[in-house]
Length: 100
Image 1 (cartoon, rainbow, N blue to C red):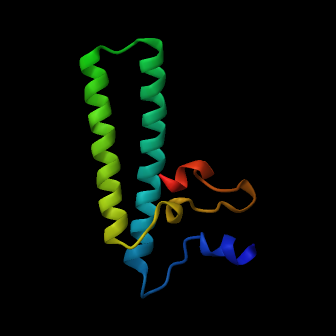
Image 2: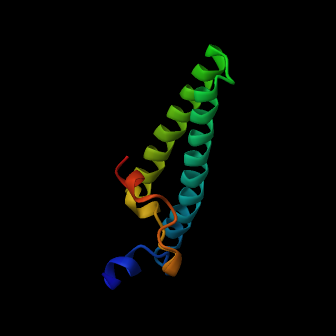
């Protein structure tokens, strides 16, 4: 298990700096995307949005998710690669979202 945990940590190496930096940036973007998605769902559930606003938010979130897929592919990363292990705090992202 310790090798699995260490594989999820960001390791800066002169040969992989670009990929590691992309991994870190995409991890932050994915965290923000998930937070925005949860907030949008809450607003939809409470009826705070018009149909037009719901449609626009849905489209925006789908486009962001598609762009994330493109960027992960470009850097050879899978969804699980963005879930950085924070040591004793555990993984940054909820485990269920790695397969999306």
